[in-house]
Image (cartoon, rainbow, N blue to C red; front, side, top):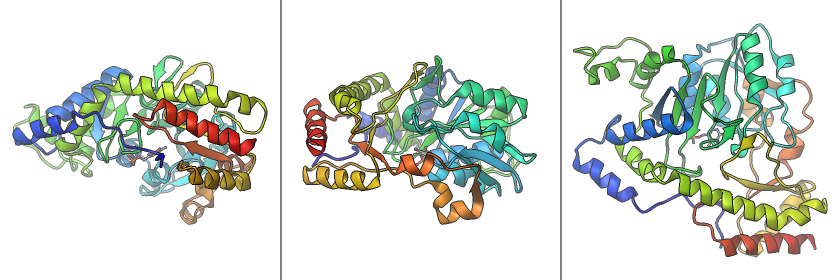
Length: 375
Ligand SMILES: *Cc1c(COP(=O)(O)O)cnc(C)c1O
C-alpha cells in the first residue's frame, strides 16, 4: 500500500533527543528551541520567531497580539483547516468567509475589500499547498483600513512570494510542525513576528502571562505575572526532534519539489487533454512541494477515482469541507458574497501521496494508474 503521508524522519532525531535528555533540560526554551527559532529567523528573514505547541496556538497568539475580541470580525477563506477560524473564535470574534480563486485555491484578494466593515480587525491569508496568496494586494488593503495581516503559513514554510518568505510578510505568520507537514516535531508550530514592538508581549503570552523570558536572560531578578497568557511553548524533546529536520531542510525541500515536478510532468498530457486539472503556480511564487493535487470533473468522478486507486493500493485523500457549511462555521461565521468556487472546487480536489522518501517508481506507478482510470 502506498500511504498518503509518511511523517518526515532523518535518523538523527533520536540523537538530539538523547542530548536533550542528558542535559536534564527538557522543558521549553532550551538549546534546541533556540536553534530552531534562530533557523526560522534566518531562513524566513523574520525579525523574531518563537516555537509554539502547534500552529493552532501560534494563530491564537497572533489573535491575542492583534487584540481581537468579542464583536470583531476576521476575514479568511472558508476553504481552510478549522484552526484558522478556531484561533479567532475562541477570542469571541466572528468569521467572515470570502470565496477562493479556483486556480490556486487561495483567498480571492479581489473580494476582500467588499467584506470589510467597521468591525473588521484582521485578514488571514492561508497559503494553500505552500503557494503564496497575493500578499501585495492583501497588505495594501490591510494598510488602507488599518487591519492586521496574520498569515496561516502552516503549509508554507520554505515557500516564497516575490522573493519574500511566506510567514514573514504579514504582521504575524504561523507555521505548523504537525506530522503531516514538511517538517515535524509531532505536534508543534511557530509564530513569526514582524514588528519588534510585539516581541515582549509575545514572550509573555507564551509563558503563562509572565515575564519569565526576561528573567532567564538576566534582564530582571525575579519574574512575575504581568498579563493574561497561556502555555504555548513546546518541550525541548519536540524541538530536538524538529532540529534534526531543519538541519537538512534544503534536502527535504529539494526532494519534495522533485517529486512534485515528476507528478506534474507525468500528468501534463492528461491535464492538457482536459480530463483532469493540474495545480497552478503563479510566476512570482516559489512553492515547497507540500502537496500535489489534481482536480476531477466533479465529486462523483473523484469518489470513483479514490476507489479505483485504493484497489491499486494507493491512498489518496480529498481535503477541507468548507468551514461555512460546518455546524460551528454557521454559528460563528458567515460567507460574504457568493460561493462560486469554494464548494465546487473543494469537491473536485484530490491529494496524491507526497512525502519525504516517496520513490520515483512509486510516483510513476501512481500516475500510470490515474492514466489508466481516465483511458
Ligand atoms: C495543519 C494546518 C493547521 C494546524 O496546524 P497544527 O500545527 O496542527 O495546529 C492550520 N492551518 C492550516 C492551513 C493547516 O494546514
